Image: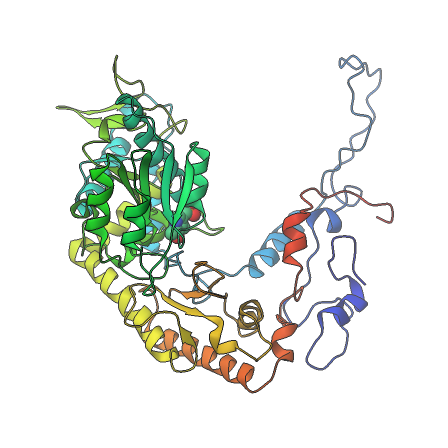
Amino acid sequence: MLNNQGRPTGVDGAKNVGSATGFATYTGSRGLSQVEGLIYEIGDVKRTGVDFPEVEDFESCLGGMERKEEIGLVGLSEPETMRHYTRLSRKNYAIDLGLYPLGSCTMKHNPRINEKVARIPGLSDVHPLQPISTTQGALDLIDTLAHWLKTLTGMPAVAMSPKAGAHGELCGLMAIRAALEAKGDARSIVLAPESAHGTNPATAALCGYKVKPIPATADGRVDLAAMKEALGPDVAAIMVTNPNTCGLFEREIIEIADAVHAIGGYFYCDGANFNAIVGKVRPGDLGVDAMHINLHKTFSTPHGGGGPGAGPVVLSEALAPYAPIPYVLAGEESFELVEHDVVGGKSFGRMTAFHGQMGMCIRALAYMMSHGADGLAKIAEDSVLNANYVLASLKDVMSASYDGPCMHEALFDDRFLKDTGVSTLDFSKAMIDEGYHPMTMYFPLVVHGAMLIEPTESESKGSVDQFIGMMRHLVKAAKEGETERFLGAPYNAPLKRLDETAAARNPILRWRKTEEE
Ligand SMILES: *Cc1c(COP(=O)(O)O)cnc(C)c1O
């Protein structure tokens, strides 16, 4: 039996989730994996809490504004509350549980030294409204991180406040728009390759630009000839990811930059894949005008339910004057915080109330300093090595989309599943039964049924070997006609296969009490 939230309840619910032996359990739990309802379903104010005695001669001061319905709070004891959240946390997949092969997301280990440093009281308790004289250390930290970001990218300026990659894209395009408007040259088009991450065209559209897609070549890179064709006096910028979302280095990146500069436009580089080239290539040497850096990808700060992102944006000389406020300025004696642009200044304005994700800046700097310059270059090398090991170990049974080695992630498409009756989605769901979070699927859009695998440098050879073995096992099962194991997968997850389209189209965002309850 399912309750109104689609969750199994009681004995029948156990049948619903199935078990190896087929018998239903009294609780619906399976082994030590307990079923867990929503906190509102399992709690009840009538079971816990304190009853105060009626007050005598009570006179309300609320003038008729008193609550007339039940407040609807949850009612759990402290141990019940602990268990609720701990049980939920056990249903979550995390990088601390296993390999997390989501391509484009760089799900790497967050070293615990990061957490230790972030918990130093002087850093963890700092408040953005404290007097500047008492936050010099925090400003120094932001400035030091900014220094390393500029050094690693070879760029002269960086905006530290954007709170994610997509927010950084917005920052970069707003700076580009401000620079163009300052020249009295407002333009209307932004070019983006067909393989671009969805946030690129979304950001350009949000900034009021028309997005013109640029096709890819047969070897998975930007079609330079088509790009030049699309250039014109109305093009404000091109947004290119490098290495791109197919996991390939854009060999003609300098020609791309030169071509867009020649028509008076700017080059926005999506730096989400910086992990592959950190310490090896400086984007500033490639003609980049603006690039966001996802601290939560390249610099290991937790993400994906584990923490907020952070997306500082490095800027070229041409765009630096348009950077957002607030920013930190290293003075002779102390650090200053510039909250208002100078009179006649060019800053495009403010994106965040304060200075961005301070906690993530601390973790990212701890990560950089604990690795050093040589260690960061090693990260790029090992992440590329791991991805190529995956590619080389799977390409005889899966269909690699492009010839030759990859950068930090390996792209496959669904040709190897032809005539098996198994789709990329089914295959991904079967990975859940094997205890793995699926790789990124159906992205990038330039290949059919994409499967994008990014092991990152965090994984040992042993753990990558187990992943490869699991993938080969599933490929064999699909090719040998074991379609059942795919079509209904995941069988071992608490709720089995969900209707994700319905969940996206008709999201139920608010719990409501129903009659039976
Ligand atoms: C992750 C990612 C983004 C967006 O970054 P967020 O921090 O998730 O906003 C943009 N482009 C690419 C290629 C990405 O992988």
